[in-house]
Image 1 (cartoon, rainbow, N blue to C red):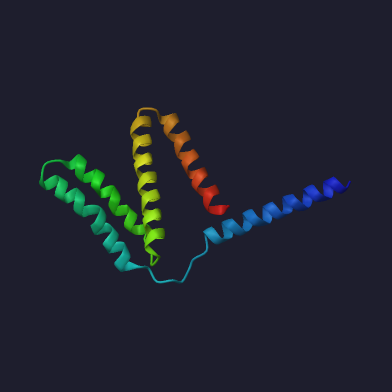
Image 2 (image 1 turned 180 degrees about the vertical axis):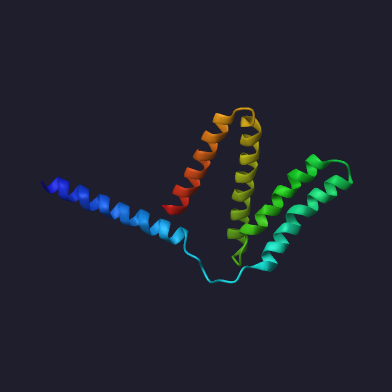
Length: 127
C-alpha cells in the first residue's frame, strides 16, 4: 500500500509540473518587444542573401544567411560563453539544414526527425 501512495504522489507532482509548464508557456509577459534586436537580426540574416543574389550565387548567400540567426542568441555575456553558444547554435543550424536536405523526399522521415529534434531541445532546456 505504501508503494501506491508513493506512486500517486510522484504522479501528482509530475502532473503539477506539467501543468505549471503549460501555464508558463501561455503566459503573456509584459516585457517590451526588443525592436532593435529584431531588426538587427533581420538585417544580419537578409544581407548575406541579398549579396549572394547580387553576385549570382544565391546558394552561398542562403548558407551565409544562416549565420545571421546566431545573432538572436547573443546577449550581454562574457566572450568565451558567447563564442561557445554561437558555435553550438551554428552547428545545430547546420545539422538541421543537412538533415532537412537529406530527409526532404521522405515525409515520414521528416516528421520523425522534427519530433526528435523538438523533443531533444525540450528535454535539454527543461532538465
